[in-house]
Length: 203
Image (cartoon, rainbow, N blue to C red):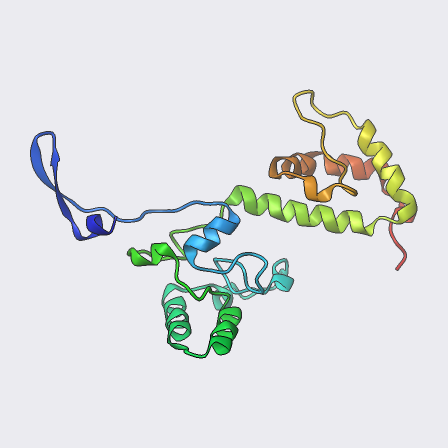
């Protein structure tokens, strides 16, 4: 790819042709996408490869997107600052502050705009949000009402082609992305059958 960025003579249909190519758009799921963008993964304090919003504020509705977005030239400056730091502890602090790794992405050798050409994977991003909402919702249930919810869950009729979904309270970590998206379709009906004032924890 590096050679093609500079241009290369190749034979096309019997004729020598000057070929130039570059990186277009890279799609990947959340962890690998962050690796290729050169941003720490999503368990970092600022683990979004598009913005610098802290993980505690990801769902805030009043964010100033312009000031929190990651910009290619600013990220370049931060990477340069990290690479020039010789004290390991200070370098680690900078990596944490910027949520950038100490070593650049392999794709940094190519001409690209790292934050524009590696957009978020909508499928995984949406499923991740649904998973977070599911976890928070189930944590609101009182201990006495959890059994009632599970009973409604077990008896709820789902499409025949669906595999049986895991228990959302006891087996939350077993949910696959496809399970979470299916859950988003039926959860409103489950809550409609189950939810009452006594279902929610008092504290």
